[in-house]
Image 1 (spheres, rainbow, N blue to C red):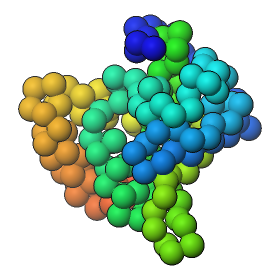
Image 2 (cartoon, one colour):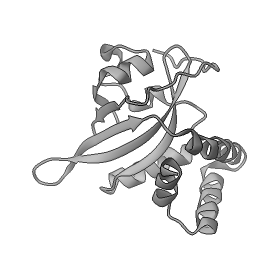
Image 3 (cartoon, rainbow, N blue to C red):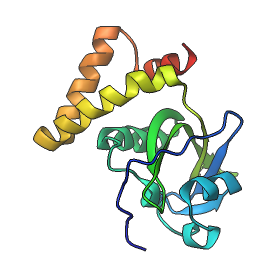
Length: 170
């Protein structure tokens, strides 16, 4: 399946929705719940075994995925705001929590993600920030967006995790 052309149609998660998926260590989908299939507009057969990036919207800055992979591959959970792409070109925003999954010997065997609807207040902060980060990536690469994000966090005196969680909670 080729990547759909993004359009401006936004889907809204319901307040009580939980999008759940599991992947292997390479990011290939091994499980997805009904709401994941509903929002992605893809049946399970088109999702299982595919890279989770199948729903990656180009509006989400690359630095977000760099941070996500750094966190989970080192055994830490992460919270992030992600704009996802559906098979019909529509999009939807999620507030994601991604955690490593372990075997009995404490080896990472995959990743587990639960996504909920982000707060309107959080999106009011995230949307312009992501636009700036994407612009910086387009002109100066991922290093430029990472530097901007790090400077923002330093100015606020918070870690990435503290910032992301605080804007959802406000």
